[in-house]
Length: 277
Image (cartoon, rainbow, N blue to C red; front, top):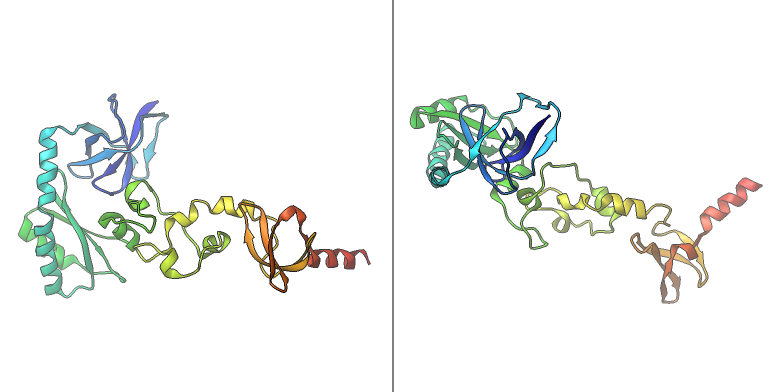
């Protein structure tokens, strides 16, 4: 058994498991960890977990070196202050090489042994000459990472229509598939501007309550279906899965919300009569 914790590398960066090395951590602690090459900083986002031998897809788990001390904090702040300069130089070189890419962010690794540039592009980009050019300027290892629009939103941050920080920036660990069906089941307007996030994709929060709505919608009449109720016969014009009720138009301006238990679907009854014959 060994103790592991989840660490989010850098601000809104990737999340990985690291061995605690006998140290105790609390959520929110800043730490210095082993990286691919050199050291990196991150933030603890989960409590210590005891697990059997575990390894990542890349091999054995790396370990946490220490909690960040005041000197580390100054180094992190100093590295962040260089971001604008890194972006300015790289943007200029991208234009010179005429590459179809949009720079999103740049950062030094904690020990300043590497600079990572993040960019988006609709196509694959041959940036080998750009890397050589940047390496000759900064005299450190250069890494360019192509990211998606969702990752871009996570890195740049912002607020959703709910007024809160983006889920992907604050707590969401993985990007699960989101489909238009999730919006339909929840009776949400299918207007792209209403159900799309800052990234331009369907909002991740559409999936949070989807399974619950799907469960509650089971056996409910569909919109447009004719039903018979104690109030008469009418057509379903609205469905409320959470209340297990439907809104029925009985004609002549008579509209009423009826519980599902009080509804009989005429089409179903007709089908049953045919089967009996």
